[in-house]
Length: 279
Image (tube, rainbow, N blue to C red; front, side):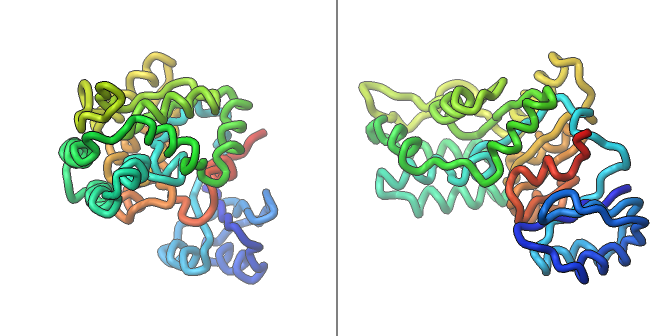
């Protein structure tokens, strides 16, 4: 196995060498300004805590595993591909962001069933003008750091990209077109006479639906589970992430970090690319 360590800052040589010593690594290779590959590394209980303490992301990757070995990247949207929770920002237009955000946080921690939490939050938006959705997209929605670099690398290696969200098609469809994504699936808000009714149309895209979409597209592409990346940040992403060969917790809740194969706690989304050899 190789151990990849990366950070947003220069990693002092003494720290790199200490981690390499703990991992009994055979060789240290600098692969980016703030990233190193430690060849033939062995797991050690202390490494994870040491890296976290020094704001370093670390992850073990099998020797010879290349980015081109994969065929599909499946991403959550809110707080993963983008920096906001769209429904919280929509609620802010209604002056009820704290109430909605509280439910959002509980759902992400896994304390409330997602479908029920979504219905409760959307119900609070009844009567809001649909123009608020466009305002959120134009004024508040931002990609998380490294998103475009990550997606460019996926495209370069022929890896299909899918956004699957418990959020809303109003945002996923726009991001799909803007970023050139291959697939996007989310929930549809009911709008009547230009106003949100407080209801969601059709079946809710919940944790199981996310997993089902991953498997459906994976099978259409003729891929194995080992050829799929899945990335998310909340409890609603866990079933989806469990279906992928590589699951990535991005700046995620503890319940997600502990169950993912990799965690990016400090670096941007392009940290996924750094994990794997590209030649």
